[in-house]
Every structure is written in C-alpha cells, then in structure tokens.
Amino acid sequence: MSSADIHYLPEQPAHDAEIERINEEAFGPGRFTRAAYKIREGGPHERALSFVAVHRESVIASVRMTWIAAGKGRALLLGPLAVRPTFKSIGIGRKLVHVAVEAAREAGAGAVLLVGDAPYYGPLGFEMISHGRIAMPRPVDPNRLLAVELQPGAVARLEGDVTHAALATKI
Ligand SMILES: CC(C)(COP(=O)(O)OP(=O)(O)OC[C@H]1O[C@@H](n2cnc3c(N)ncnc32)[C@H](O)[C@@H]1OP(=O)(O)O)[C@@H](O)C(=O)NCCC(=O)NCCS
Image (cartoon, rainbow, N blue to C red; front, side):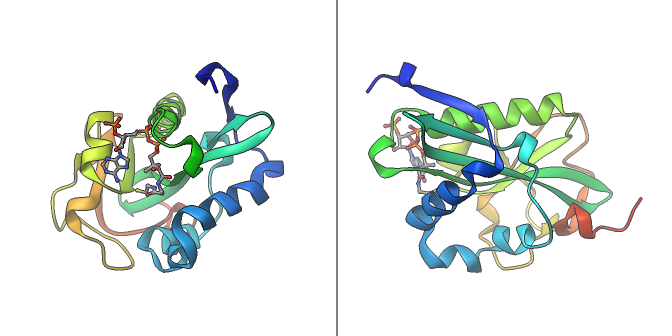
C-alpha cells in the first residue's frame, strides 16, 4: 500500500457507520465512559471540521471535532481519533490531526483541546493546559489535557467547566 492511495476527506453522513465501527474497534465499550464522550453527548460534532482517511473507498481512520465552551472561552475538542490497526504507524493519525487543526485555524477557532498522550500530541503542537484551569465532566489525568492555541489568549480564556458549546449560555 502506498500513502498515495490514502485520501483525506471532510466527513460526510455516509461515513457514520464506518466511523462508529472504527471507534468501537479502537476504544471498545469503555469509550462511553470517557470525559470527552460526556461532552460530545451535549450536542453534535462539527462535521465540516471532522475528517476521514479513505483507502479503496473504505474509511480507515477518523478524527472528529466538537465545539466546546469553558468560561468565556470557545474552542474545538479533538477526538475521537482512531486508525484501523492494519494502517497504524504510517503517519495517518498525525496527518488527520494536522488537517483538522488547520481546518480549525481557517474556521477562526481560538484553540483546539484534547485529552490524550503528550508524547504523541506534543510534536504536533499541543501543550499541557495549566492544571486546575478547566474541569472536565469526568475525571481525567491533568497531564493529558492538552491544547494548541490558534489565536493569542484563546487558551487563557478557557476557564472552569468544559461543556458542549450548544449548552453554554450566550456571552
Ligand atoms: C493513536 C493512534 C490514533 C495513532 O495513529 P497512527 O496513524 O498509528 O499514528 P502515526 O502513524 O501518526 O504515528 C505513529 C507514531 O506514534 C506513536 N504513538 C502511537 N500512539 C502513541 C501514544 N499513545 N503515545 C505516544 N506515541 C504514540 C507510535 O509509536 C509511532 O511512533 P514512530 O513514528 O516513532 O514509529 C492510533 O494508534 C489509534 O487509533 N490508537 C487507538 C485509539 C487511540 O488511542 N486514539 C488516541 C486517543 S487520544
């Protein structure tokens, strides 16, 4: 397989069933108990900023983005990110993160937040958020709360409880 055979496309409703299967395979039933999942339950993800990797007309990886609010701050929550096992470690995950972050930047988002492993996301520009600044709806290891700032001051505006943006009071 050559990386030229892999295409990165904005997510479409027709991809939903395959994305669900990829997330099931990657995270199992435990995915429903995650803090990020709880936030995503609050409303829809932003399909225009979510992407799939396609190989021979099959979805082999997915990244989703969801608008969130925390205090006066607004940002995108990145995740879930998952790659089918036979396609791992050839750069697809990194590419999807890059594509999603650049799309967020073009959409005018101030920051992209995620819960994930710093050794993976650090080289992609993500940094740890100051401990205690924001609170997820379920416990998370604070060392795994990471963000990339796209507009100056956007991360500092994130404060307190993180919710789906649709649930935040208008400011
Ligand atoms: C994590 C995941 C998305 C990475 O996707 P991928 O396409 O395999 O990753 P890439 O090819 O971009 O990068 C591979 C590199 O990242 C490293 N890596 C993978 N997961 C990592 C992790 N959790 N922490 C640190 N490094 C990691 C690999 O060892 C590899 O290193 P190398 O380039 O030195 O060989 C994929 O393994 C996956 O779907 N995992 C299950 C779901 C998951 O954990 N998602 C992330 C939730 S935060």
